[in-house]
Structure formats: structure tokens, C-alpha cells
Image (cartoon, rainbow, N blue to C red; front, side, top):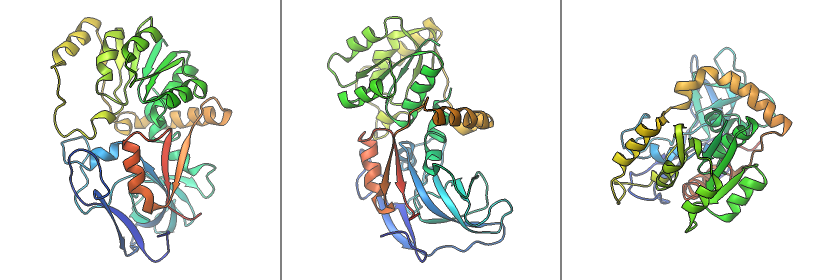
Amino acid sequence: MKQTKITNRQWGLAERFKGELTKDTLTLIEAAIPAAGDNQMLLRTEYLSLNPYMRDRMSDTPSHAVPVEIGEVMVGGTVAQVVNSNIDGFAPGDYVLSFNGWQDYALSDGTGLTNLGKSPLHPSWTLGILGMAGFTAWAGETIAVTAAIGPVGATAAQIGKLLGCRVVGTADGAEKCAYAVDVLGFTACIDHKAPDFADQLAKAIPDGIDVYFDNLGGKILDVVTPLLNPNAQIPPSKLVSQYNASNMPAGPERMNWLIGQMLRKKIKVHGYIIFDDFGHIYPDFAKEMNGWVESGKIKYRERIIEGLENASQAFIDLVKGENIGKRVIHVGQT
């Protein structure tokens, strides 16, 4: 099942589903490698990024992005190498930041691609700390961050620390919280599954929260909202806790209470799609983040899983929360 020069392995969406993902959600097939035509190039996937947002794209629930159709190749960011090219500015052997999806080979007309050159130092990092995850986190006072040791949360927290903020995170389990404090430099990290989570969080943030960087959503918002300071800001990054929900959550209606808190405290909630809203300042981010990573001021943890054939199970584990840091599939053989 290794990558070859004669077949194109593809993970396609096999079914819509309710609840949690299963091994039947995606199916692995083999297809012919496409040939590049005029103004096209053939790309060979080297690395595939796994991200929680992909779970949402498997659903047909209305969203900002078009859902993947049944039978289509699953979408995803990739680092790929140019096999052959009929496009100026891209030559065989160049590596590119691309969007091949879950497959070995893909055609591209160059739109939206970034040429990384023939010898990028850490090519997989462009899918994480130097890519969408890091860019989403690049945004002092006190910052609260959920999913604190994921690629977005961990980066947001470290940026906050570099800018002089006090950073408190939440994660599921003592091991993840210890990593957040001991390695990433969080001021504190609270296990959101602890029975006294609300009390622990309040004690860790005696002066309230100025920025709530939310990656999780769900019941943690109920605990965080009373701790928000006047004029606090909430940039919601993603709602991982809701990705498997097929219906409205059971429980009391809190929307009026939440709106009341937003009104009285002048809280600003601003949804955003990272490249739609901030793509024009990506060069500024890339320059600053590269400097932070090279100097060791930003720490980054990545788990590379070998083989496209293992992508489905790796993604199922990811959405269950069985990860620390960024998860990447090594598809190619280089």
C-alpha cells in the first residue's frame, strides 16, 4: 500500500453519518494517475494535514464551505512535489503548499499554491506552525485558551506569552495540562474533566479573562462566560466539541443569558475564516513566526504518521482527542 508511480490511492467519502466517525465513513480506492494538460501541473503528495474541520466537511450541514460529496476525494491541505509542469514559476522537483486532498497525485493550475522551493527545511511545518494552524493563532492581559495543546491552541498561547499576556489553558487530562505548563509555558492549565473544574479555573484567573480563544465550544463556555471582563473579546477558532453532534444539545436554554452577558460586559464575538479575512497579512505572519520558531521562542510538537493507508484511523483518533500537537500523514517516500 505504499505510494507508487503507477497508481493513485484516494480516500473518498463513502457515507453521511450521525454521531461519531467509523471505519466505513471513508473508503480507499486506486485510480489512474492523471496527466497534466495545458496550464496544468501534476503534483505528488508528500504530506497530508489532518484537521478537525474536515469532520464538518463530511457533513451536509450548511456551512461557509461546500461539503464533500459522496464519492469525492476528501479535502485537505498538503505539501506536494511537482512531477511535471506546464505552468511558469513551477518546475519539476519544486515543493508546494497545496490542497491535493487525501490522495497520492492531483492536478493543479497553480491557483492558491505557494512554491516552497526544491529543499524546504521543514516542509511538514507549513501544514501546522507555519501554515493555517499557526496563522489562526497569530492574532495584554489575560488569555484563556481551550484545547490548549492542539496546534492552534498551543501556538495562540505561546504568542500570547511572547506579547506579555498571562495565559491559562484547558485540556482533557493531567498529562496534557502538564505539557502545557512545563513545555509550552502556560501560566496554568486546568483539566476540564475535573469535577471541580469551574472552581479551579476561577482560582487560576482571579482578575478575569480579556481574550477567550475558543477551539472547543460546548459546556466550557458556560464556565468561562462569567469570568469574562468588560470589553472582552472571543475569537472562536473552531467548535470541536460539536463536530459529532447531530441535534441541538440537551439542557437549559442559555442563549438569552449569553446575550445578556455580551450586552452588559460589551463582549465582542467575531467569527472569521482565516484566509478569507486575514490572508492579506500572511507575509507578515510568516516572517514573524519563522523568526520565533528558528529562535526557539515558539515550541512546536508534531506527530507524523506513516502511510496514506493509515489516514482514516488517524483522523478518527484525532477527533476523539487522542493527540498532542499537530497530526500529519507522511504520504510519500522521500
